Length: 413
Image (cartoon, rainbow, N blue to C red; front, side, top):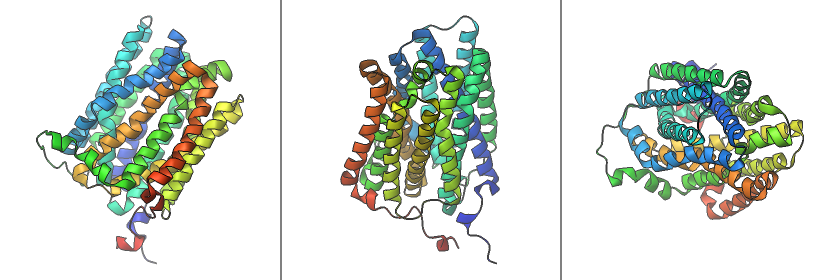
């Protein structure tokens, strides 16, 4: 019997990827815990849906402002050191929030200031993580590694919110202290990762270098279509910012229930990512991406209309599963079609389109909920996602026709 091709081997057999995966689990678990704790803290303090949206905006602004710089840094400096620095800054934000909660609470403005600093750290972290991954595994294994890496994110998305809700209910300080410990462990794991690709070198900062990622994406309609499709889907479907309102005022399940609601999309996404890690999309990937985003919109509408806790959980699980299909296809297209010397800058633009759109989507949801009400805000967002799918199929026919993510396994040798 012939040995399995590279693309069929377990990605966890590669020690660098196992460490990378562990670091991402630890960091994302802490991020999810901190998000639940901050969301409940702000809503208890102000009772304002708009302020919940401002939490997302406070993270989005530094991501947008630093996007071009973060990509240049990721392409010209040791990516592991960048990630360690990011975990250190996030540790400091968790410490500040924990001490604030311990000594009688923090002013509203101070909370937003800390969140802004946290968003700046994530602005550097997200493109650096994306750029580092292709150097951790052989290229033929990359689609499987993307799915497995996404499973790390979703494992944390399940465990983090539930754990964050439980710890915050016991003690806000305990929740933030646990986040800090996880950031330290994540930094230690990433230090041990070895990459087969090195930074291209410290190129001088220039406008041409900073804008290279934007120009590259603009010249590639498949990448442009995939990134912008996810941008508008996440922007319009950002219902997670309103989960504290659903937990407290609509479903009446408290902070523990909020943690479960936050975890539900991760359950669906984790199940799908584990499936895709073994069976990555191979044919008609463009059509699969459009179908997945449409399913995301339908699940958002179902969640928005639900007044039942079990039904809401089912809708969120389906939302997470459909989103994961889109995430894996988009991330694989992005990494396989981008040379390593530009991955940081292209990933930085992708982070603004996708990663920061989560925060901007939260702001949009908070703003429309303040204007029109919580349920109409979520439902309109889901309908808007379906409209975007129809428009993007017309605007980006190359994406709709995209067939394969990678070369056939026979090319693995």
